[in-house]
Length: 312
Image 1 (cartoon, rainbow, N blue to C red):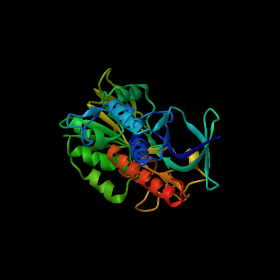
Image 2: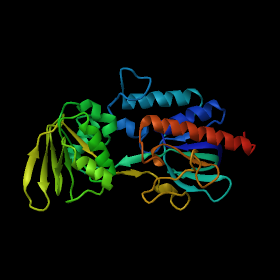
Image 3: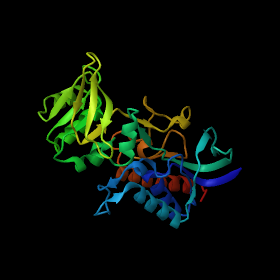
Image 4: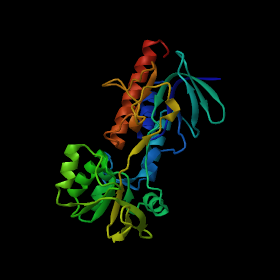
């Protein structure tokens, strides 16, 4: 069994920022990257809204910078997953996928969230190559200003992102698979009354047209069976996110959708010595810069906890 002062689970902006702060504080953190080292930003091409990069930067390159900075201060980065945890005692137990057992005085969770996708091959191809499919309008909408785009989804997030896109684009096609929106009443009114947003009810996407970039979408009316094609330059998928927190069920407080609940103004969970940061606990903002901010909070909270307990 290995004993560690601070284990960080996850390697996106939150995890690496927590690592930088914890390492500089002399906590000697060990970071487990998980199955997607670098998190969601590794499938993002151009990042233009993170401070400090005036010319923008590629998502994977940015996460390499984060990793190098964390390692420079002494973070032990391990390319493995944590598969099981036991938070029943004052010392937290964790097991890696290879069966390695760890005792940790503190744990910072930064496992992120994963966007839900439609499941089309063309969607995956064009999303991973920066071809015009995105799960974040606030992140990528700027690249489509002046162009017609489509957004799929019927909840508050879809309505908010459609409204955001309407400020940049001449027309936004909003595709809803039912005959009504699930969004709150005020958000429903906002999109339905926006002359730039065209509603497509009972509509599902069957294919995305374009080899290297989005050129249009093929849709079907699930009530009438009628098929049609809509010419757009971008497609935004807003059918929800799933926080990567299944590992902590039964141990940590979470909401109905699995987002970890932290004490207001802190990164503290209901278990002493366990802290949560990034998209695993943030369903509102979901930005790299806010994730990094909560990663900083988690590291500072962990350092103070370890100091108070006389562990460092």
